[in-house]
Length: 350
Image (cartoon, rainbow, N blue to C red; front, side, top):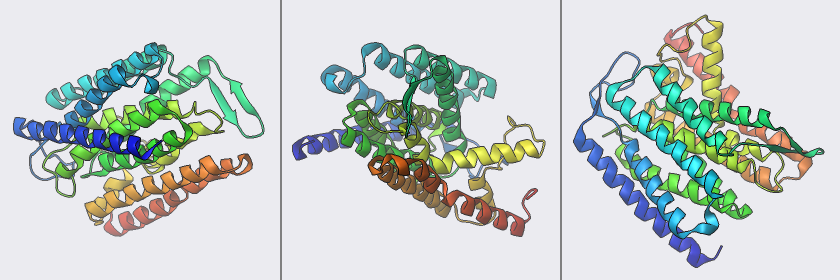
């Protein structure tokens, strides 16, 4: 990529970030309010739905990409399937922000969106492993892809409980993925990641460190869905064995928090669909760790995962299986730290 092309791309992203910011500012004026309750961290009614800026900037960028950058497009059925599914996720999530629908309704919409994406042909058919090479998995790959989409979409939704956390992690993860995709010549992944960066960059100044607005489900679910789809695209990076692990490494902090919390609550006999404040990041904040600090720690997890991804792409085949473990290495330390703080603060059953 030439310096001139990179300058143009950055100018394009800056323009879309301004579009995102304008839409976020408009949502503040609409005053769709998020009311405090015992499971939320905020104490005063705050506007929500700021994720409309992220969605709007992304879709405008996609429209321009579809019209003028054919070299960066997937085959049309794939392209339209992914975008259609993303629009469905965003629309239902926005209506949920307005009307607070039951979880079952949201899950049904997510399942439909995942089915639309997989049905268009966007799923992992082949896995590349060190010493083995590629092997075809067929329908199992379609099922695994749908489960992956649902898990990441909900994980980003669950993690959106402190100012700047979900948007910042999404921006950092997309930034590293854009760089890796450009290096490998995967132009759809590159531009899609840049569009997510633009949307989050326009939103973040309104949400961190002080929240004038929350992104709401429309933002968190959309970010999760886009990152999940980028993970599927990354799994098809030619010549990079285990490339399906790139996005999980970038989101190691988010995914490990959600997985740890689900397992802990299941072992405690708690109903998993019941709203709660038991995620590790929430427990840390309740135990006295400043919310800004918790957010910055999760940004650090994403940045660490990004550095591990860069090393992963450059590493010889024999070393690749160890780098995901390196990406996960900070998580047991975080679990131990949060447990110690929770015990000291006498929070829950630890």
